[in-house]
Amino acid sequence: MTVTDSSAGNGPAPAPEEVGAMYDRFGDLLAMVLGGSALHVGMFVPHGDRHRPTTLLGLADLAQDRQTEFLADVLADGLPPDARLLDIGCGTGGPAIHLARRTGGRVTGITVSREQLARCGERLSATTGLADRVDFAYGNVMRLGYPDDSFDAAWSIDCFPHLSDRPAGLREARRVLRPGGRLLMTEFTRRGTAAPAETEAFTQLWTSPPPTTFATLSGEIEESGFRVERMQNMTANVALCGELMHVLYKEQRDAIEQRFGKEATAHTDPLIEPFRTFCQHHVDYHLLLLSKPES
Image 1 (cartoon, rainbow, N blue to C red):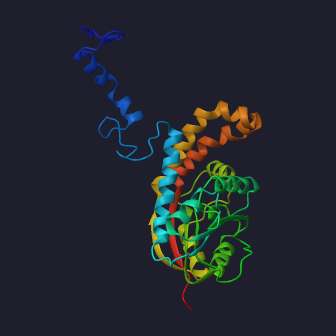
Image 2: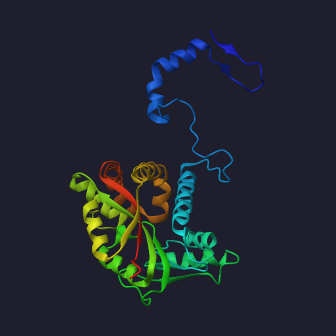
Image 3: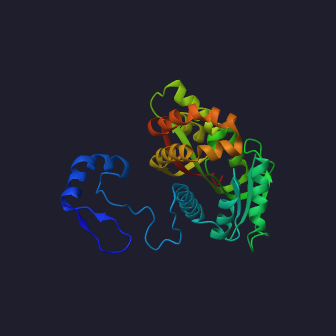
């Protein structure tokens, strides 16, 4: 029997037996798409948060902002007043601007993308009160154009995975830091043995060499002369990022093809699934806080 609601515009309400029958039959299906911990809506956005995303892309933006804020808090601890800071691989400029606000320091952001550099300038122009404390330039961490001991600290968020010569990047970062200066970096490493197609998908979509093992990364850090102050495993984030990119690509595919052309989707279509699998099963993700010895 179905109970009806007398409110105008509402359809028939299910009877308790119908609700029970649905959960009897499809409860496990719901767990596959909603999560099986409790079968209710999760707190993707903490109550009272100033950001309230209602789309997966909005949730991805919120996650990136939270990561930026978290990393800025890590680097800011112990910085001198009016610190000079280097953002290696600054993207479109948002993290550099946040770092300047968070620390009160002067931030230089560098990128190898001319398009990103233009976006950085636009973002800075739209920001008030930071024109004298933030600047952006074209720059390659494997060959930095700054004198020795130029910066009090540096960070590099997801830039080192792109490098063809990570040891050179580490040596250059160490060179331009003052004694006692710190480098905060994030980096991928590989676990297990992936299928060649999975590794190829990751390297093509990320424009990177294949991730190395953690032992290789640790050896290169030691050889560069840095000391490790803090190491934190953030692998769950890259696994979820791969899942989200897979879903959003499927959702946005038509818009992507319209903007970037059929060649772009023809290239990406066969890569997105093995990329997702590689992120899920073979990529570890690390926060590393390194320091240059005082002497």
